[in-house]
Length: 396
Ligand SMILES: Cc1ncc(COP(=O)(O)O)c(C=O)c1O
Image 1 (spheres, rainbow, N blue to C red):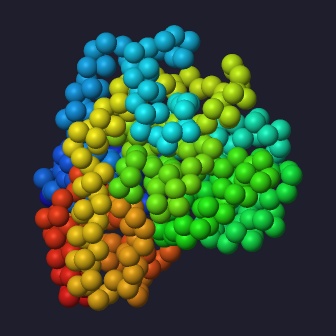
Image 2 (tube, rainbow, N blue to C red; image 1 turned 90 degrees about the horizontal axis):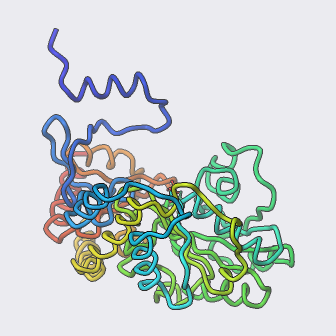
């Protein structure tokens, strides 16, 4: 019998001891560099899924790695009961790149936690209970966030659901108006719905939401867990032209914010922050030094390397090249949050690309393949992807 490879052994151990909650790709990740992921059996993959939209700065960006190493030598952790230079810098830097009206940061550990805290702040600030979210939106898996998630079976998984959640149709302001009565504390949305298959609304929809919120005293929350931190070629969807310049009252962030060190955040206006008192919100690990060092270094790396401009330029190149691929009937999204719509199911293409060592993502729309690559992806890597896509279709 042939000896088991290192990869086979790792797979066997993980299958044996880890709860099987994810359908895994047959990839044993060992090392990363920029857009490349190296496996323990010597393979090299072009990572257009960016480690689940987390590797915004690319895998192991040297500036981020060095900041984390330096911080690890200094102090791993102390909570919000003390001040810290790492936290002061991260909060200042994050607020400095945010739209002007978002003046304070609350730090937590994940996207779902950021959304839970955003909804809680809205309820505290308005004294109301209900939150409107949208069909197709995904907001996380903890109780309140999963109850706000009207996508596929997620809400069902979270039963019994938390009360206080209302549903409207994404892109249709009349359905929002119909439920936005005086019981409503917040309207929360993914400004580009990612898991749903990269769905965007018209700029006028975001403007209409802002006007409705202002008119009825409702807090507007953008869940920018995926769209934030440069992914659309802007720092945030909030304030961007694609959303008619609309700035919400709260922006939630996670994923790419720490380049892989778990961290989430809420950015809030003065009006909201003035309603939040000591002990209203909290979490032991939020604002810890390792996460804070990662946040500052992540934002600096994006800035120093001109990644926002890179995203816009390389997106244009990708869109132009994809015109050559007749099986791609539409390209949805913005920047490096893109959905390639095929005439047929996307899954076989996702699998065939993986065979060719290109990692992409699927979505809950069976015809849409998702790309969430690192913001440092280059044009020649796009060429490699499009050529591989052509090859895969030629073989099928
Ligand atoms: C838009 C959006 N919001 C919230 C979440 C939840 O984030 P986390 O998995 O960090 O809790 C996700 C995760 O995929 C997401 O895509």
